[in-house]
Image 1 (cartoon, rainbow, N blue to C red):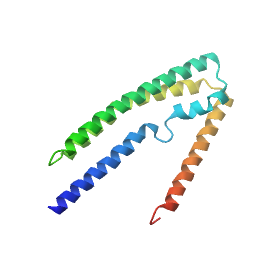
Image 2 (cartoon, helix red, strand yellow):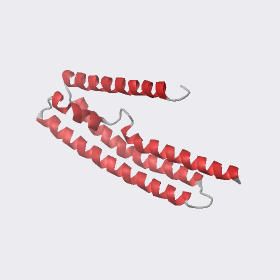
Image 3 (cartoon, one colour):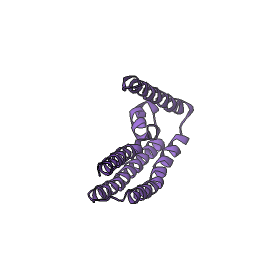
Image 4 (cartoon, rainbow, N blue to C red):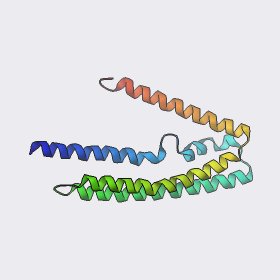
Amino acid sequence: MKRKIYALIFAAGLIGVALQAWAQAPGHAMSDPLAMLQRIQAKLNLNTSQQQQFDAAVAQSKAAHQAMRANFQQLKTATQAELAKAAPDLAALATLSDQVQQQNIPTRQQARAAWLALYATFSAEQKATVRDAITARMARMEAFRQHMHDHLPGS
């Protein structure tokens, strides 16, 4: 009996960690051009047409983020309801999680397409600014990863 309880607690914890990681996923470390481009927007010296595309891409990204959050909330609610049962159906939760992720793919791709269309209009100098921002972000991510690795027990 104890093993079943521990297995259930472990599975619930694992699902919780997976859901939390998945909830963070819309940022995907490097796939959030909105945050990065908004930080460097002034450096880009956008022309009027690019500024209009930038504003449209921001709106598209915000709408996508809201849609993905709503889908995640649906999954979170279903997870809570399932875990309230004596014998939760983890396979059903996994299926629902897969369905929610599939629903989010086109939304994320549309937002990404708006940013890529804007990037396609950039001059060489603007592209270099974006490249430098991405490179700096990757360096910060690697430094953070290394810091966490160095400070975790057993590393």
